[in-house]
Image 1: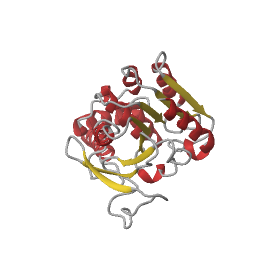
Image 2: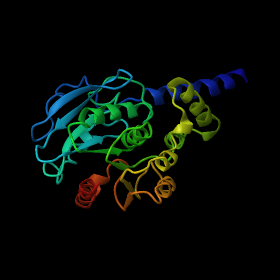
Image 3: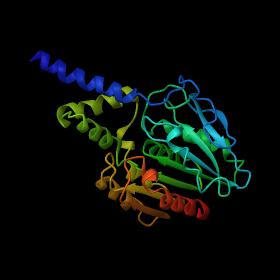
Image 4: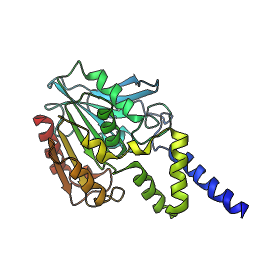
Length: 281
């Protein structure tokens, strides 16, 4: 019996550690990562978040627009997955800043909190460009979308939010990930969520994205989702959609496109919609 209890306590603890210290696909130690990855002039900027974490990203000023778009990747990804999204928008419509969140890409190591502290990274990026540009748009995918939404809830001043593949709640997102690993929801996932709050300092009750969206006032929002999203179910999307009722929002539901990769499956329609939103915001 004692071994069973130890098992039930140890496994969730180890899972919570893995979630908090998530491995990322691209890190700063890869050779050549600091070479300009864009087909036009861009420079690597280093910024400091309010909690001291160094974050980095590629800045491509257009010289033709008073708008900048800050593009933010999802979990385990980096600026690399977003580098094609300038097409049809740059340079006439906006400048771009391709941000790497903490613990991702070229930015410094830090615990992964799926938007809770990553919101500080978004805030630092907006602060860098707020005085320089008339309009600042934040365009986030998955964890990047959650980071942007939380940043606005923390008081960030932006002129528009583009959010794709946003999870419903962080607890739900972790549970779905565990289910994909055939980990039983009770008692292992329940205990994992308990340990995760203790280890990370994240308050899961504050990571309900529908409630966060309800609290946002006066900012145009474009919500993008795909019926084929395997990580954010349609039930979550419908809750987010309902949270935006009565707000200055546009909803785009695509039939194709995996989680974080709607653009790749719908590039023309996707960019047309995003460009129109940027111009109208």
